[in-house]
Image (cartoon, rainbow, N blue to C red; front, side, top):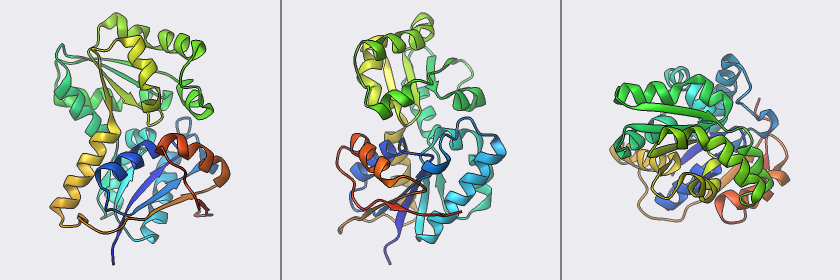
Length: 264
């Protein structure tokens, strides 16, 4: 039986990761779960995020997945070490792949990290960057308004530009040459972020690096599908209509047949 790649997120942001998986692994089935009933994860306690994550993984394992991709920066930053010890299935987060790429890309050893308050306060990006290269100076900034902007479809315009200038000022002042987009919503704001920071600053979109890592793990384990038609299934814990309307923006194509499940 052909097994799928499982992907979960607290909401719709993880679809940027799913989109990259679909692009780089066109023959793989994908099962996506968005925990919309309990979003946002960024303001929850560590214990709660771990509990939600375990419940989400158990749901995906019922769908017979061969690998799980945690497409949520909050879960990757506060829960990943714990949940990896609970399960045999390979689990890939969004932080380590982006960190490795950023450390490789920086020329002046100044890396900016932008994300939600939960992700930034966890300091996981800083710690992982320092483990790879102690010489790197890390400037981390929380950008809480970016997520609602993306979900409302405000991807350009004067208001978004002004907010981006305010948020990103510390990164400009520090002279960073590389910035990690530490939230799966942020790739949709790349044009605005580029406009503020300048075209010479590298923007690291973890989704691309995650897909590369998933591909490598599946190839090593002999689980990579190299032909055949692929199926993509989408499940949510609430409001499938809202998810479907936003999914088009994230995936670049309409999503039909989103199923609502009571998985807990």
